[in-house]
Length: 234
Image 1 (cartoon, rainbow, N blue to C red):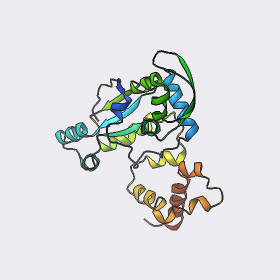
Image 2 (tube, rainbow, N blue to C red):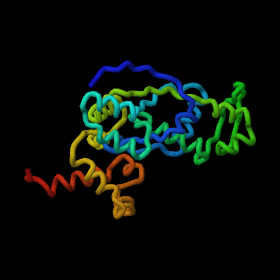
Image 3 (cartoon, rainbow, N blue to C red):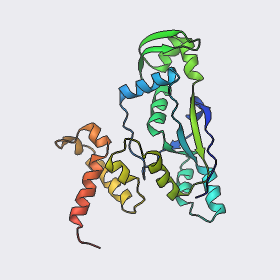
Image 4 (cartoon, rainbow, N blue to C red):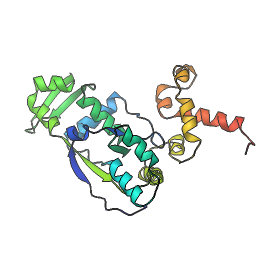
């Protein structure tokens, strides 16, 4: 892995969301934020307190880097061919939260500050409602920025290590950490757990609440079943 200079930059959210961004399931956890957490995140942005960086990997740049160094480009090329510009390594939940808000799928409520710093109290509102009723608050969201780190010199294996390093002190559970390991069997077991024929099964099993399934309890169950049924097989 080449050591590249990390230069955080500011990017308007509306520009960021114009790109097709993918969070690779090979090592990323699932989107777990619920409605209340999303609203709090939007509020923290509005107060100027959302200073965590979003870490992206520039797919075309990584393809070029890997080609120059005779490294494998297959996974990068795969996502590039699907039209993705970036991979989200850190910030998946934040990006999805922002996308849902800017695409008019998330209602926010509470005390916010408009573009002039004047406090505004709003009831449950979509962004389109805010544009009509509080144009200066809408102006604030129009110009809102996030801090972004963009990486361009990484191999696919580097990304697995990068994800674990970023979340070394974070709240990933044991299964989410195991999911980030670059093992050849992991995508198969993940596919079984998330197959359509299991879609309505997990929620009917005692103890498999929606939030636990989000935190990959279903995948952990499949992994355990695989280990038990293949015990002793080389």
